[in-house]
Image (tube, rainbow, N blue to C red; front, side):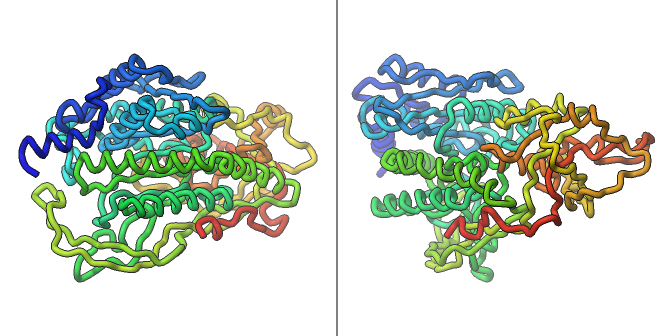
Length: 555
């Protein structure tokens, strides 16, 4: 294929019949793939769709931010299903704004739905989409960004982080950005059964057209995680039959293999709920990570993402009643666990081998920008695939936590943003003892992560811990004014990982209590008190029986 003829055929493939029908074009389509869209161009495209056909409407969650720190709008749209009781699904794109394929693909998908091309999806799904989630990064286009991937030549792509330098895909627990608070509000207001998060890979030359992942969240319901994985295995087999090879997201080990040190294994990403694909599982919801292959061409990456999203949506539409049943069952299991005895959750997780799988390892030829322009060889390998996690360090879950009322102005809005039930301290069960945290070790990060010097604590909850000399005491009035967060609530798993000081995604970890937990030279006052108490039995009061062992989550 050569010259203008090649470009013409490529554009015809991208646009399909939409040009002939007079439907609006995306920015790549109308610029011959030279540019990707800005926030305002996405908005203009959506408004053009709204004029072309009824159904698509702007969407704003109740009580949510409307703009980023710099004033760029947070824009989403809703396309309600036309059938009875459609399944609610949220699609997120451009959380990393250098990974722009999802932003363009979801615009095409909405156009196709309004054109009537996928009648089952239009009937059985209620969609909310946010094509430019990282609005600041979306508009910070630069051809120098991510030079190792084939990019739109004129505009380049956007920035990974937001204007404050935050990676929004690490912000789900601390919720420091307006974008994240918008998303948390959406999860409460729209309450989707599933969340799709669209990305592009960074490194391994694996040769798959796209990789994907289910939620693999520390401490989430094991059966729901297994169902989440089952969905994607079936989507993978469907796409394989259509000639599109996909697999679980991950990278070769070693990360940059060579002929002297070839790949020995495949490993997926981590289990922290700070990631958007992992966070919904702590709310007993499904999630899907999509990672288009960075070394495929720019139009191919858009096309692959479009095909994958449509395949996932098709599976969800077909299995919507089963999805609802699985979600209800996960919620019931958490409630029932409290009636059956002590509840336990893991504080850490380790990668687990799930299967041996087939991989093509590409030994690449790269140009001066690091782009893959050819192959020295392609080696077929069967490798152990570590795409699951096994929970470790299980501890009993207390009845609830009390948070020092001095921190209520900062902590209460955050807990409410997550949708947690927060009561006054006087509502705590008076028959259970108050537990103090006995610290046995700590690790303060030597450098900032997400703008925070993170703090990891080790220790246990004890009923008898002597206070430090001159430590600020907890008075009865303090206890009654404290924030009480019971764990026996629908989002109790989420509350545990936010408030237990040993959690590496807790508010302690993310620095919300640094003023009392980090004391250094020049701080001459009497010691403050530990800002969290637990209510219940101590860590050594009963044997720890995992209520949700992750060893089974990814079978």
